[in-house]
Structures are given as structure tokens and as C-alpha cells.
Image 1 (cartoon, helix red, strand yellow):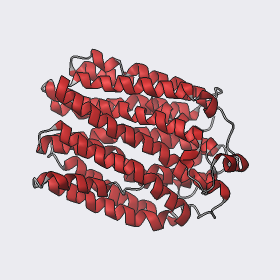
Image 2 (cartoon, helix red, strand yellow; image 1 turned 120 degrees about the vertical axis):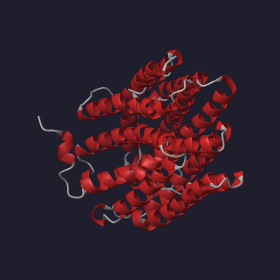
Image 3 (cartoon, one colour; image 1 turned 60 degrees about the horizontal axis):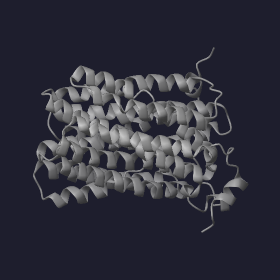
Length: 406
């Protein structure tokens, strides 16, 4: 039997933009936890670190869909170049502010400006769609990207924390900023695979967030994002409390291993169950897994429970993005995908802030209760939205009816 993943990379240019896109989106995971790791060491307060991280992530979550709408209208190159430049310069100021002990307001202002970072996962998927539209390889490409996203979110966080604890507090953020700059440049210079700009139609005149399936999936993934942001923050605090701060990166790293492997396997399978049911099962496993770290009292046990609790994250991403591809018109795909990643970003911001506050007030291990609450809400949302998510693939006429004209 042929390998479906090798087939998608036979198309010209796919290896290049996939590699560059992976590098450029590492900051999605590295920056929020990198800010926490940097400021918790330089300023000594988890609440401040969480607040600055939340400022960046929330601002990016609200700005990114608007940037993606411009990408759909004007093209990737015209929008990615200026927004990336703003974000890189703002991250540089944030690093300097932490290192030189500048006033607290400079941390928040630079975090706000850094939020101009465009949504690379959405633009990578737009390129895959341009190559494999209406072909079965598109589903495999989306599965590959979902597994890559999961690896970015968790392995990227591990790298950021590891650099900050092993070298110097700003190391994680410095490397994250370099990845953003050079990865984006490498992505944009590959013009041959850049999607063409489509004319505005009635179906693409509104916003993708007005579609009910997009609302349901985005809301659910807010709380999925909160579960692993909480795990990251609580892990950093707990390993420090146990006197093994350097183990934080290893513990967060194993969070990725099982999920990444399972995601690759799921992406290569042709599962017969409807996608909305697959999403419900995956989110249920995530919710159950959030209980496990509450039982850990040592670093090895923490690593084991975190490993098990993260197994279903990649399948959750695969099914979520698969549903988005079926419910959003082609001309709005970049924005539709961005809304989902926006939900993850919002969840990471809120989870990071909430976990930081709980850790400061009640101790490191109690921070995992934020994950339990978030997982429960995500599961309830997906179960309540099964009928809407079961709607057949959105065609042009259906989308026109679903999206009010502006």
C-alpha cells in the first residue's frame, strides 16, 4: 500500500513551503510560554508574566482573522511582509524591555504590537488547497498539517522553556523571533505555490465566523487551547517547586510524543465515522486526560500523566480542521482556518493567565484544575453542537444563505 504522505510531497514546491511554514509558525507556541518563562525569571512574578503573555495572545487572536481576510483579498506576499516586520521588531523590544528592566508598560505595549504576526497555519493550508482542491490528497495534507500544528504547539513550547531555563531567560523568545523572521522570509519567496487572489463574491463578502460550525469549533478549541497552556504553565511551576526546574522542557516535550504519533496514524487512516463524532471522541479523551496530572507528585509521574493526557490533541486538531474545510467556502478558507487557530490562541492566553493566578495562590499542582474545567466545557460544547457540525459540506449557495451580506 502506498504511503499517502509521500504522495502529497511529490507535487512541486510542497516540501519547501511546508518546511518554511513549520519554522515560521513555531513562534505560535514558543512566544506565549516564552514570555512566561522570560518574565517569571527576570521579574519574579507569575501573574505579570501571565498577563503580558495573555495580552499578546489575545491581541493576536483578534487581529489574525482580520489579517487573514486581507490575505484572501490581496494575497499572501502583500500582507505577510509588513505584518511580520512589525511583529519581529515588537518582539525585539519586548526582549530588550525584559533584559534591561524597562517600565512594565513597555512590556504590554510591545506585546500588543507583536500581535501583528499573521496566521501561518492558515496560509500553509491555503497553499495545499490550491494544489489539491477537490482531490483526496487534500485530506491527507490537512491531516499532516494538523499533526505538525500539534508538534508546533507542544514541542515548540518545550524548546522555548528549555532554552530559557538552560541558557538565559530571554533565550526562548530570541530564538522564537529568529524563527519568525527567517521562516516567514523563506515561505514568502516561494511564489510559485502562492494561491491566486479570488474576486469577492456574495459567499465571501461576510465573515466566516458567522457560520455556526465555525462558531462551535472555535469556541470548543478555546478551551482545548486552555488545557495545554495550563499544562505548560503548571508544569513549569511544579518542576520548579519539586526542585527540578530544568526538567520542565522534558516533561512538556513528552506531551507531544504520543499525540504526534497518533495524529500521523489517524491521518493515514480512512475512518468511516462522521467527522463530528470523531471530534466528540477526541475531545472526550482530552477532557478525561486532564484529570491525570492531578495525581502526580514526582517529576517522572508528572511526565507520564502529561504524556497520556496529550495523546488525543492531534486527532482533535485533525477533525476540527477537516470540519472547517467542509463548512467554509473556498474563497474564505484562510479566514475560516484562522478563526479556529484564533480560538486556540485565546484559550492559551486565558489558560496561561488563569493557571498563573491559581499557581500563585494555591500551589503548582492545583493549576491543573484549570485544565479540568476547560476540558469539560470543550466536551459539552462539541456534544451540544453535533447537529450543526453534521451539516453536509457547505456549497456556494448554502454559504451565501448562511452568511449575511454586509
